Length: 152
Image (tube, rainbow, N blue to C red; front, side, top):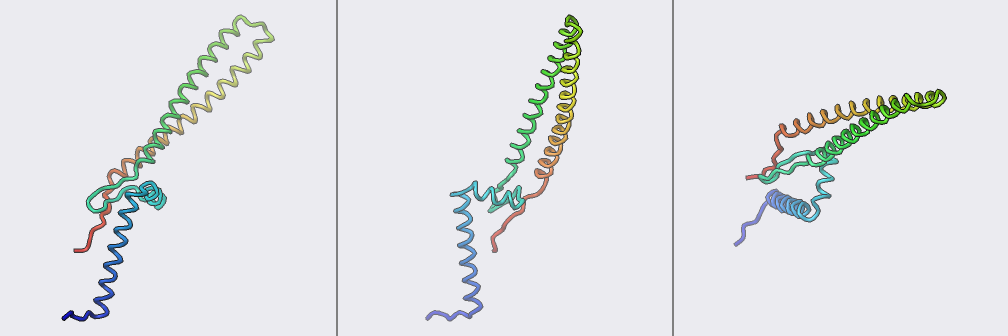
């Protein structure tokens, strides 16, 4: 004969079934739509977590962002070199130029030097951004993962 369960035990068993169903749905979502789960957790501020002994990390976007900033900084360095080459070329042209052309060449040289100064300022800001991103990545790597454990 089956033993009759109390309402409390029935509720507890129902909650266990619901919990297990939720876990199964989450695992299925992780396998079927990992990018959706990744985006949702990243938007919620999660960068690293441990589920069932496995570690999931969301550092990828920050690393990609850092790579883009590094590339932009390198591109600005190339632009800076071009500015210097053009300035030198204008200075060499100015030596043989007529007096009325020298004034125009001086204006062009001044414009290029101002643009060069702006480029250096942006490069400096990008370098600070790279350093900050390195600090954030280092902090993320040092933080312990939060573990979700099953009830015994």
